[in-house]
Structure formats: structure tokens, C-alpha cells
Length: 118
Image (cartoon, rainbow, N blue to C red; front, side, top):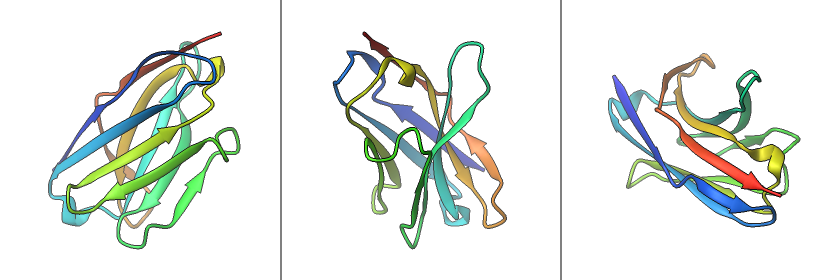
């Protein structure tokens, strides 16, 4: 089992920045990739960004490219999502997830709310 705990959400104005953190514990040696997803009210959950745990390769949704950066601190078992130039449409509950080498995300945190006011 892998446990994931997110933090760092909040209420900000458009144009501001936030950094989300996700601390992983448990069987972290089994993690191949870490990802961030988000779900806005009335919408389906969508992919935001991902990072391979060992190699550090990153991938982003087009909607956040150039504004969001995913990174990791392997020693701390923590992955971050730096969000700059936030827009009202970024408002959502953000979840981090741990994935296996097959591409499935087996574990998910409880989520953290990000609200961007215009």
C-alpha cells in the first residue's frame, strides 16, 4: 500500500501562485510515476501533470503547459506542483496519484481544494 497526503491548496486571486505538495509513504519503492489530477464541480477528473519517479521525465496537459511545474524530492518522498499565473478555470480539487509501470494509477490522495477568484 502507498499512502498519499496532499497539502497546499487555498483561495487565491487570478494571476497568483500556489505550490501543492504530496507526501508519499508506505511501499514507495513500487511507485513508477506520480501524477496530479484535478476535478472541477460537474466535470470529469482530468490529468494535469506527471513525473516518473526515478528518471524525472515530465508530462503536462496542454491547459497548464508553461504555467505549472511538477517536481520531486526523492529523499523526502514528496512531489510538488508549482502553479503560476492561476486562472479561474484552474479551480478544482487537486489529487495526487501514484502509478505503476503499466500506466495505471493505483493510489490517490484525499485531494486539496484550489479556488481561483477572478
